Amino acid sequence: MTTNINTILGWFKTGKKPTQAQFWASWQSFWHKDEMIPQSSINNLTNVLNAKVETDQFEAHKTDKSAHTALFEAKEDKAQKGFADGYAPLDSFGKLASQYLDIVNDLVSGGSTSLLSAEQGVVLQNQIKSINILLASDNINLDTLQKIVNAIEAVQVLLSTILVNDLTTGGTTKALTAEMGKTLKVLIDSLTTIISEKEPLITGGETGQYYDYNKTWQSIPTVDISGKQDIVNQIEVGTSQPAQVSWQGKTVIFTASCTITIPVSLIDSYIFNGITLPGVTINWVITTPNIWLFGTPSATTEKQIFTLTKRGSTNSILLLGV
Image 1: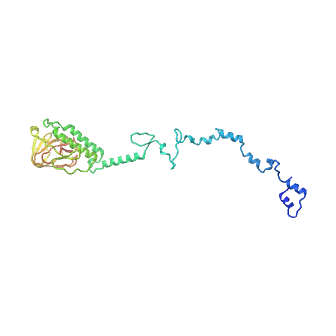
Image 2: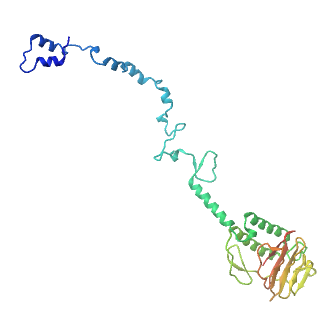
Image 3: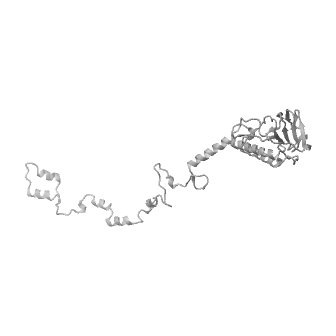
């Protein structure tokens, strides 16, 4: 039996004289060290203990691999971080670290599941800029890559049909000496380089010189043409006039300075070889719809050997060898 604490305190006030019974009642209201306090006498102890796990159960739980399986299945195994078939960690920016990505740093390896490096993106951009610069042209006849290819192919076709190894073979579709053929080849190579590299307009040089593929001015070789022409195929011209149909397939020797006009109509694949004698200059005029395929030519000066031809059935006129 216990006594209320306030009652006990009232027994022991100043001036009071507690009795034996009050002394006993006071001490019997407290637990002595020798006594075991029952769990039922401790407030809410049973509920607290019931909320705890038994020690043997807790120890078994720590080694039970099936415990919390559902939770662990949603987690990555830390031991697999950074390993094959594992998972890739994030860098300090919360991104996948580059060493765990399949990044290709060249333009030849390829791969549909690989990533191209940003550095190769810069390389591609520079190549695109170079192509755009190459195609930038103020010549409407050579302002696209296809037109440049067509112009080069046209020259190649002409070279395969008109060149011979001498000046005695003749023929209505043949042109130029073997020596002049070499000179023409040098000029074509130079022209091809200019077109492909889109160099600025070449200036300088003197009469009797050509600009070779080494980008230097060279003297045109002096060729002795005496005794190398078929007299039957030669025509001499000394006055200004339109290009004549009768010149087709012939060698035309210009004996005096004059102006030659390309008429409105010329036969398909029209062609003739020309020679200017000393002191002779030829000025060229073209009539629409005809056009100069390689741009308006300058005057042809003395001691020159050249070829004038029409590209098939088109309106394109070529003046070669000057």
